[in-house]
Length: 294
View 1: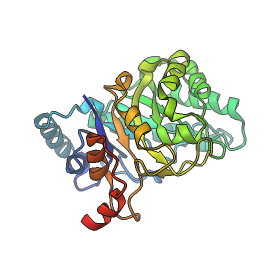
View 2: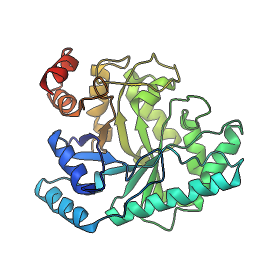
View 3: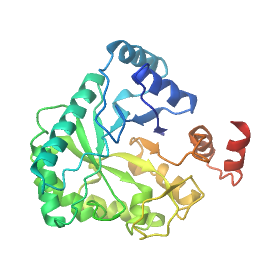
């Protein structure tokens, strides 16, 4: 079964219920959200009423809630411990986000590994694993390390870096990976040879560790290390390649999440992109149609 959705909002006055309704309006059967603003620590208490109502609707819509994903805030950076207080903040805030996931019944949280900011990759890998070891094992939430584009001093643009982090994590049952097609391409991996990539991933890490795939085209050529998402089929990865990834049998039960940019920064493209993906037919006029129909 194709599990396809997008990033959706999570608002204080509707929370999970609002996230679900937005996802359903796009024709999605899964989704991803932040439990609050990704750039700050402002959070509202989880309201069980919204959660329970959303769970009931998901049952009626036959949506597998175990495949719904939360994304950790951007401001968490476990890679750099030069300032001990900032490192402690990242550990504490990540733990609080995981606890919010538990309150919502969410099983998977995507996490950017972080940036070493001059400390070097080896120190960063050690720091990330150390931070995760302070948290994992106490909660029933699996943290998914996201593959990154390699912008600046980002950790995780090479599979070997992800592998080394996982090797140092004590609780292997609660650590996994989220692939991002834009990031992988920008990081230098050829997405048109995705099965070869999966073979390499399986050898280094194990394909069973992949629990989410972010589906994004890229504004940049392969290996650019810039991380600029593009709408499906309008970038350098291309529609046919992305379709082959989305429908790859080896990742059949893994949720595919769109994080493509809003058209003119105003209009969500997800309903139209999801329909295009389901039809497996690229519409070169999609962007114009979105502008006309909204």
